Length: 350
Image (cartoon, rainbow, N blue to C red; front, side, top):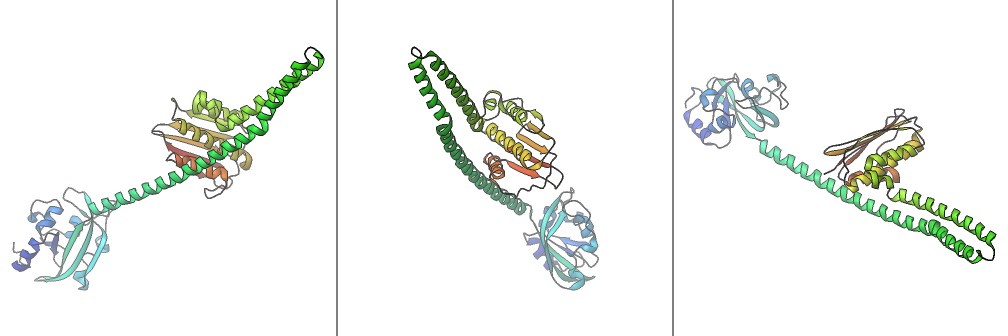
């Protein structure tokens, strides 16, 4: 075990240390690696490392694989300064070429050939992995909290829609149906005594019936469109395109029906995006694209004024974000000034 540069006693101490440690001479060559260092670097015996240049052997690359110049290395600095050094942003290379992150500590040591360096290092792979798992867990918790908040807001918005629908039914279609019933009753009473008056009342009743049907259709379209129930999302998007005041080109490839909640939220996101584009962007054309795999990917892109940011407030935009979040997905807006606006939605369909 004697290297000619170190007394055997220190070597025995270093050999017994469970942390990887090695000694480098004044020229930067490995004088002695302890067993823990040999094993950590994937070698079978210390003789494979002794005499090799330490930097070129194990410390030649950054974590992304790019070269790490020896001139930038601070690990051997104690040989020049006589002061300790430490760091955590370095990577070592094993014998098989794989890289792993390390924390290290270096101190000067006087050898027979001049001042060298003794370095201890710790493999940070498990710690980095644990930190990454914790970050992912924290992010998942944040997403779950956001989704719950979005679901609550969607439910509140849905409740408001129900209240508004009930009010509209009461003030609109219900009143027309009441008027229809009265007209029919009056017409029935005049059929024998005043047939001409009865005919006029029946004509008025028919008008009230048609108006009530039209109002009910409008209400139904706002609550849950018939096209979505019968034909799924492709048919519902085509229906929106046909009703748009601006030409809409659709490219929708969704071969199978999706979960009803996914279809409904996606439909209302597209509906709101189209309405916003027509109302605010002055576009000449709007493109709607939809694809489905593990995720449903939607985009609504116009060639209008642009200049809309995700930070813009408003019930329409916030409702779109909430619908995407409630499904565990994301909604992104790209809208450079003068360059049109693209609303992109990605939601899981499992």
